[in-house]
Image 1 (cartoon, one colour):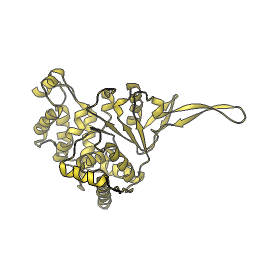
Image 2 (cartoon, helix red, strand yellow; image 1 turned 90 degrees about the vertical axis):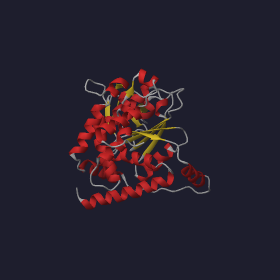
Image 3 (tube, rainbow, N blue to C red; image 1 turned 135 degrees about the horizontal axis):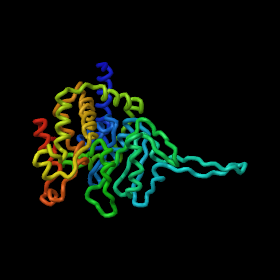
Length: 329
């Protein structure tokens, strides 16, 4: 990797991160993990209560990264064609008829799927091919999506009426689950002061689509030490409730992460290092990203849930056992 190119990308990322932080106050960890998901070439699932600036974050990310963005409000009556688009029969001036494809909002570079769990499973499944293959099939014809293509979806964890749990196959396509918690008192005070006046913080583009792709390529070219790869494999494999798993996992976990989790961690630790201006990831990066990379790819059994076991605590224990570091809170 060319050092000057690396340093230039890292400097631009630092500026982009600061720019987003002007709009989304008191959520540095959330901002970093959202950048990591996009730098890794993946998608992010933002989970948090209403009013925590999830939509504001996605809008700021689209502007700062210079990406063509669309927003879809997911509702129970939303249909796949409302996302993908559809063919319509048109009659020309000479009376001839032909089908014309009208693109849906998915034909963009950054799609915000707002309250994604409010749509039916049929509509949610419309995203599966797009998120994995970056193309959609409508009326038997495959259509490529723009590059880069990312989905940032939001989900409300406390409101269950009128919602549908996301299928495991769809959850697995999100590189990271990004938990958005309440800000501390000082941050909330800053939010109140900055958003209730006559002016709001402005954001401007720092990257464009080509710049984002170049940053993603830099992530993939970054070297990874053997100890980091081994720690990732140890962690992911230890989280599966098979015969080789430890007592904690066998007793509490009903299903564990697929190899996609190891792929996600391998990319995410490099993206975190680039975001911090470092030349290679460390075991601390693995520990910091274990929760967002694994928690949506695992499920607790009924007995464990009844006992009050939390998936976060299981992952934290596995991180300590496999890396010797403490998982990020």
